[in-house]
Amino acid sequence: MMTVPRQAGPIRLFMILEAGAFMTAALIHFGVLIHGYEHLKAGTAESVIAVVLLVGLAAAWMGPGSIRSVGLAAQAFALLGTLVGILTIAIGVGPRTVPDVLYHVAIVVVLVSGLIAAMRAPFNETRRRA
Image 1 (tube, rainbow, N blue to C red):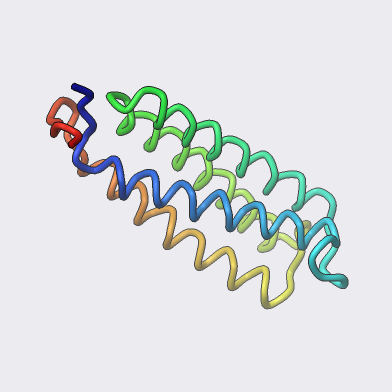
Image 2: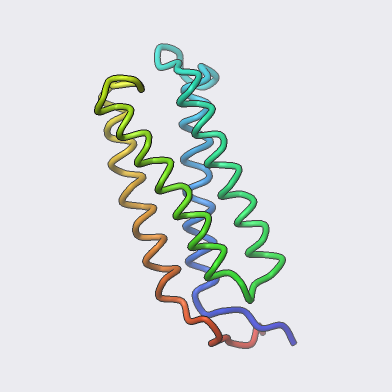
């Protein structure tokens, strides 16, 4: 019988929500969803972060025993990329609109929450899947 870590559900949920948020932001910055907020470099960075989160999510489904490590790695990468985005806003290189600033603040809160959920997951403690 397959075993999965207790925190697998919350970790996967965070990564799904985060990947969706980054994909949406990328589509906005590429001008697909909304016009007027185009920024090719921001869209590219958000796309890379979304792909990393989706690859992490796939790895979490294929190897549930490593979900803690995968969740930590993927979300830490996303947080680092987001902090770089905040830096570009601060120095005037990246997009500086109110929605961009609000998005970065909100996604940092979500990413930190996801990292906390992953950190709280035990290394070896599992439960049996029914």
